[in-house]
Amino acid sequence: MESMTVIESARRAAGLSQRRLAELARTQQSSVSEYESRRKSPTLEVVERLLDAADAELALKRRVEFVYVEDPVLAYFAVPNRLWQVPVPLCFSRVQVFPFMGYADGKEIWDLSDSRERIEFYELVLCRGLDEMLLETVDAALLVEAWPNMHLPDSVRAAWQPLIDEAKGGASREDPPLDPAGINARMAAEIGIAWPRPAGAGGRRQVRA
Image (cartoon, rainbow, N blue to C red; front, side):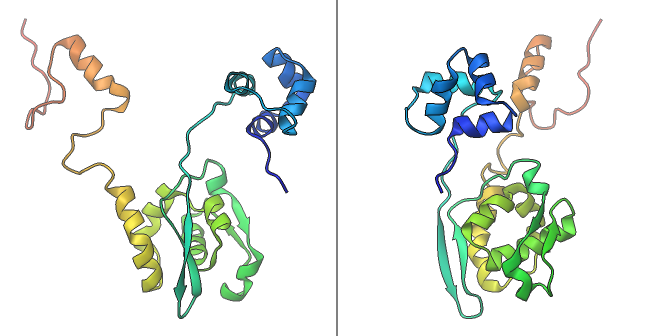
């Protein structure tokens, strides 16, 4: 089955009909239908206008690729070339997975909003899950947070550890702390102080009368 186009996905997420999306984007419903059915290819400008009408935007997303590693106990398990984000609220959803019944004492449903159940499910899916299952359920930040408390076979931990290290070490611990949105630098410039602050320059700035 062919996946939805980005236009249809954005329209459905916004709860819009094709007619309403066409009205908001100042185009024809027939054009929207042709784009969604792939009978006609829109220009990038048209795609952006339709997505904007659906309160969405295009975003660059790096492709995740998997290899399956052979293992004497697990037979094989999936390992990605990079970690990824699962959007809210999907990363905190309840998941039901039938194939795991033989590996989880008959348990079928996990609540990913519960940290203990999330760790339990992550342990299971890293060992037994297919790549599509991993992509829809395992969030990078939540995995890194759970990693120290996860019980995994040595082979699985060794295969995934470089990804965890890369996620945590993307910025050197020696680098200056992040200035979110450059707010600190702008405030410092307004009051005439240097930013980043020199080492050991903590405390309040003294203002002389």
